[in-house]
Image (cartoon, rainbow, N blue to C red; front, top):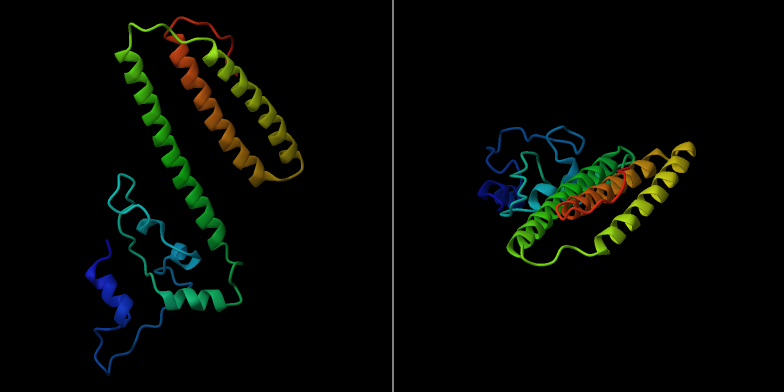
Length: 187
């Protein structure tokens, strides 16, 4: 939710309360009080308002004129704001996906506890675990190749995927180990 002060700033400008003889503050787009994420497109603090993932209000300046100045400047897309913005969005996405996986795991656990009289899991989990292990092995080889080629950022991105697959595999192993199945060594 946008506060009244932010709405007034948007409509009338940040210097709306100044007397005619007072000097206006000229904040540039590269000033530390300006939200760099907003300059790149939008501020993530505005994304999840009134949800469990609410980031709270952004304390920095969100000004459309400053965004336009940034887009017209010679340093547009060269300062690294977009890279930082993308990295931050990826971390938010990973956090939300982690929460979703935990929720699914809790749901599966509660469903397993409710149906404790039902038969144990079949070989499907074992097959899924084997498929995940194969995917992890292939991705690790690709990461090694990317690292040797100097493509560190791509390798880091793929490593995050490997970590997610390992978490998924461990979740499957923990559910099957409850039923007393042995699935071999961990990687």
